[in-house]
Image 1 (spheres, rainbow, N blue to C red):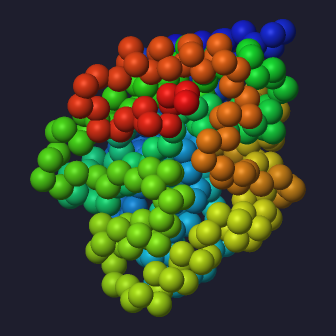
Image 2: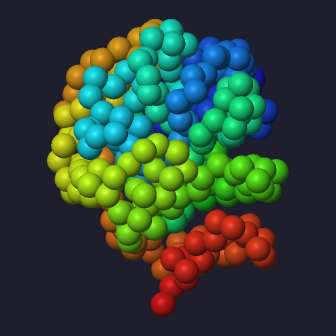
Length: 313
């Protein structure tokens, strides 16, 4: 395992690097050992894994999946696994009652072997990368030190933010889809979910293979309308925000068990949820620079192509 420090003004953003992948510095141990424990963990038949690059609507999707797995429009409460699985200690994972809905920002290849081997349910979540960068900037300023947008834009565009490069994450997911054409994981996008939430809830239910009624679909759709969910989750998701802040602040003295303690707090993980919010931050030059990088890194035939959202009209 290597370590990497990226300068942002007079401070540094630290990563742990394993097999070319960047992980947050609060990832337990030397990363390799912890990932091996995750790959070796015993999964349950009803476990679901949500995979995404950070700030892509993961928590929104996780609420939908959880409600469908439980068969009722009830928000997640007393959530002990509201951290990416690669940041959770194994004991916390093992003690969580079913149905367990995990999420992760690591590449697909680090998922538990027996879950992948028996074609367990996995859902990939994607979002317009400009909105991802915008959301990541606001999130970073909540949980870590204050940065200027122009500086953080450069960090993210160069692939040096938490979990590395968005384009690399997309590329590895494309490979997953290409390698399993018969029973591929489900892929959803933030934009499709925003446009027609009810259709997406039904689509996810069908992929999961859970029983549902039109009444249940309607109730989950109402509960997961963004403003309704943000209001309901302000307090329950505040614990995660506080835990991240505490883990970053006390990193040298923290253990995995410390990171997973419920320490309270008042911020919320869920922000605006606006499609196109990038326009509030990107300058004309930044739009052009990003679009150039996007075109250079997007091959013809790419399944996850957001060019319709990226071009300036």
